[in-house]
Image (cartoon, rainbow over all chains, first blue to last red; front, side, top):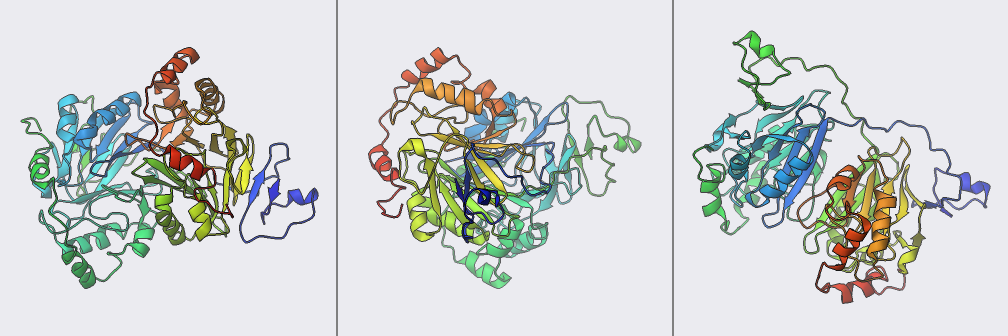
Length: 288
Length: 288
């Protein structure tokens, strides 16, 4: 039995006291008595939210599935579905017994084709959602301050233009009956330790800086940030982390604009296919 | 304002009642009064656990970071670190103000080189952990029923051989002060809608079947399952889901053994490099 843990001394009843180590090392064997834990309350009551983060490897896109699992209908929504993974997503939704209500996009993507149109062709009751400012076709257009309800849960819309003119961030509700901590689906406005480029599709580094600082960085520091992409294998960050460690957005506005003006990024290889398709939910469909 | 939601009628004060739709559609505009939500308790108290899932794209490996964020030392551990992403992981740990205590492996991997040895060379206080049954070199060897403590949290070891003879599953504690629902880090024993192959490294389909059914499927149904890999973009599953939908392990034992005997998988391209390296924590190091 290895025991060097400063908080747990019961093994010292059986052996001479061990020197306190700067590192907590403690492995107990099942044959030993487990000492009583210090008293504190950490049990977390389960939220109504069923949440899944899903990854599309080719474009490094995250799709998010959210549902109110405690509602009789189990209404669900997908944020930023990708055409190539629609079958995976719909199969999961079916297995989990959810009713897909919305297929929502944070913006008109330039690097992959949205799965929204394909989803609507397979599940016609699904409504597509995108920002009014995007100019894209959809069943429902949303703007700053709107709320999208699914069961007893809701997402609040925050306009976060700058990567594109129509970018929005979906944020879980601010009332105590909504998931705690809050969750923000930031699209390409704010990435983990990064942000979306601002050199096409009505992009503006000035606007992006203002969007992130006014609409995302003002959220509680423990707000979980779920971006549309990650290229390094991160899955989540927090407002507090990005406020402290985002290499671009922690800078002052002028420095940020200079950084964004000098990224020397190549022309997005999918843009000429993806953008026209994504303006009409991913497929040339009269119903979308 | 679109409002077809069966539970929320306040807008009908302003407009004729709308027909109930089988789909919950409700988007509210900020200029409208928000109706009071039905009363229920869903606020979840935050757990002590800081948790991050990290992805290595080339081998589709998940590395897991767990820490007791409420402990003064913020002791942390990594499960299945990958050599190529060690710098990313250590940078994140530093930014989050955590003290890395353990680098743990679920088994001797055949598809990538563990980051354990590299981590130890950069952070010498870190102790490597692997199962005794693996036969691999490590600072600490664990076996069925052992507990690995970090701060006031702990992981319980469950022996789940079958993919390799030394595979273990790390499961968060079963006491109320530990994360709820429980979390199981299953390595390659149980993958999301799949499982690890059983045709090398002391693998046995019979043993794997018994391991999963006796050690993982007996956990509470809401236990979150975090595998060592996913190739389809899933990040998490639950015991309940795999009990119902795992295409291999829901079968009877004979059928499972037949499936595993007829997978016709190619020889793992990394095995001759990875296995010898992983037997000594990933690098030929006298200290590991």
